[in-house]
Length: 361
Image (tube, rainbow, N blue to C red):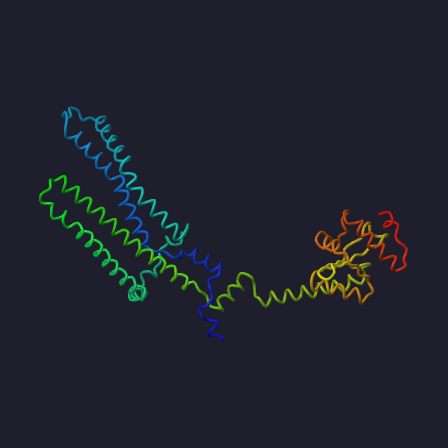
């Protein structure tokens, strides 16, 4: 039995997941972030790279052509610097911002928002030679090495196939002008990089799902761990069971003393039971002295039979009193007429004189 208790067979509880999150543990893939950043950068270059090249070309043409500078004071240099910065900001900012924003979004999607000031403090266990060697030769390191070699193979294959498909254009470079050569090489680099990024993204998604599966396996708990957590957050189950038992005993004891003093028990007829008492000399209105549902309702009916307390079946009244009136409180005004009618009926059964207060109701 102890062996099964220590087996990691239970899913992680919400408390275990929250604790792991607070410690900075989450399923994450660095390859996914890298692949998404690479793709975002290439797409941004394809979309805005032309505008950036045109801006740079116009600036170079403007600076190297035309009239020579006759002045070079501070205001003149500041004007040219501001012009250059504004031109670069409007064209280069989207290219730089896209990878950064995509990287932040990818990280947030994987791990969410974490505030971990304790990670800033130095941890000397990270420079422990024994632990370092253990991590170096662990199965996780072997898997990372194998996956890294596989990625290199995929990248080389994609690049080789892409360049081989454009072999005619590459062979024709000798007959092209310098501008055509630059344009073709730029096109080859960008589209080859884009295809490599797509391939790396597919591999990164596989790695991410593997990391999620591995993280879930690490979070799994044994039966004993679940028991210990229940004790920590909800108290000892044995103590809780003992507390409930004591509460039931106290409730049974209160019923034993309250029901025999009641004048009538109103039932639903089996699910609910409420006991009412009325003393016109001491009470302004009938008082609910006991109520119960299910097993307690059965106990109230049993005590009423044992002590000769009349039992009246009135489903709407029983439901209303059980829901709206607490033990020890008088019945509300809207229920007084119905309760008075029940009490008057009970007084007639017992051959007692009906109190004046009930007659006036």
